[in-house]
Image (cartoon, rainbow, N blue to C red; front, side, top):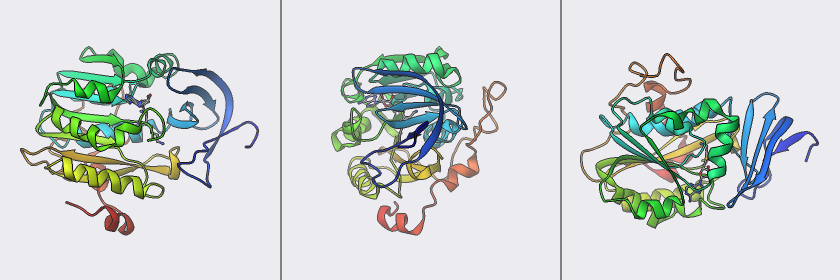
Length: 291
Ligand code: AAT
């Protein structure tokens, strides 16, 4: 450990640790679920850390939040009801709110301290909570989904932390089954699906589970996020039986019709990068396959 630097050390990426220079620790407290820390970095703005793992930095959060949101929402026409699991910082809500077709945005985050800390230190991210279409539920996403009426949502976005800690069940088959149940026919799920450089075993497990549960399309996409382990992170995109969803060819071009364009233009996502996100390196293509 280098003094004055934050190093992201975890058994999920043994033998490596990305480091950021710390200007000042702004917050550190233990919540009911995890250790919550915010620091000012020298070059990535403020950083949110849960149990020693970077969840977002001000500089590169756009690459994650825009992709995890617009990949699913631009793949279907006129999404109306959207559920976010996790995502207590509000960044995914901010992105969902760009879609003028959306009428209702539910979010279920397990840890209210994440919401409070985001409102205090990350106003440009937590701005997502200000949209009147948003209803915040504090609780476990697994339990929340079990209580949802069948066929409620057009899209479910799982903005989850890594499968060590409170998010473990969000990577398991029963959870995917309740997501599929909560979706309308031809509805879509996008879930945080880790790195092809570090977690091919986890990804293969997610893919196998999703192929069994989701009878529509099942595709892996990815984006670059410099402050996430290995500098990239992937998403699992799935659709339920019903109208076919062709994830690789978006049906909606938000880049041209962005209701919030004037306040905060999209920094990362566009239709070209949407399609490109599904192109996989050969080793990943062999392991994941395509359908
Ligand atoms: N948008 C920031 C990126 C995240 S946040 C993941 C969120 O999921 C956290 O706020 C965490 O409290 C919440 N969470 C974890 N488990 C549950 C659960 N069971 N139900 C509801 N919410 C939950 C993800 C960063 C990925 C990091 C990659 N290394």
